[in-house]
Image 1 (tube, helix red, strand yellow):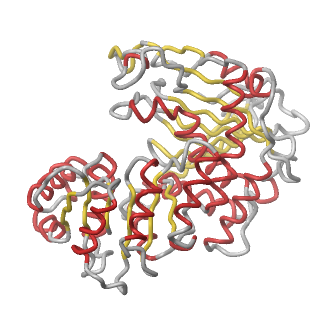
Image 2 (cartoon, rainbow, N blue to C red; image 1 turned 180 degrees about the vertical axis):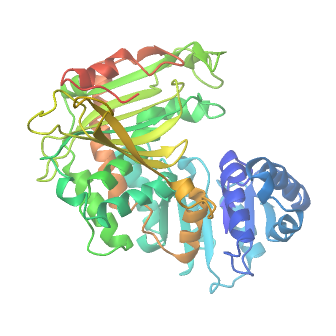
Length: 474
């Protein structure tokens, strides 16, 4: 496995700790080697020390063992090169040798503008043999046109079966449990449709700001960074039909149908069905935090959105008329990723007004599935209150350690299983829906609405639901 961007945050904070766990658990082939690639000059020993320092910070103390680390570090090596320079790939080829029978995984933990160059240079250097695979981090481009260009350049070197477009949300245990919940339990299938569901909310809220990603984020914004990939992938898993088989092509075919069925948001609908915001100064956890435009590597007059809320609709038989409310933002009051399925109330309120049933699927901070039902409060009279039926996955499977999403996805790449990765046409269909919204914001000079850090976002996001008598779950 060759990791381009081997000294970056993703490699040091996510990929190497995940590979350490896979090594510790005996999941990696004895002959597997990991070669980190970056421009900085490091000896092998210096890079191993850097990797150890970061892995110790990321791996649970009880899971970090010195002997295990030394055995893992023996797999680690480092090669200094510039991924934009074709000549450096010639040097890399000499380092790797000419054994085309060995599987090589190229993990591109770099900026997307390097994807095309790296693929081309690998081909020219003769390093993209039939057993080579490539892993691309999101975002794939910044628009439909750029995504198509990247996909075409990658496709010219690697056939689709050897391309792994990674979205770490798809590796989360609860996301996969969403498919189990839907397709392995007869209880939900009859009511998983417009006749019984009032609306769906998908929220990915963060308390952090842009941290060290200011330069990238200021050119991307929340729509490109989160909605185009993470939130739309979650929407697909909620809304897709049951695949014929649980394999890569069957699952991705059903997800693509949902993306193609999304009603376009164009013209004045951009104003009515979307909200973009940007955080101002405020307090989170009692600590003062600056406004977005004072963050490191962010333009002082930036109008980049750090919050997005969208009312989406799926035009098919199962979901016609059911709004899907998507929301994501930085510097919000709490960190949470969750999916809320709000069912319709019973046709006749026999015991007076009461709350409708709802299903909550929480991805973080703790992974759980909760079903809200109405039950009688003990005592005289039929006074009903909502109660929760909880499935805490950590407790239900307490004897098993919870895998990190990257552990599962890296192992899938090694095994050549692309079920939990995005296909080329999925990425392009997602951009086809997102592009008109981005263009609409420009056409109507839709500036971001300001919201104080530590709040739940701009007030206008609440109005998206309040117009129909609904509200965000807080």
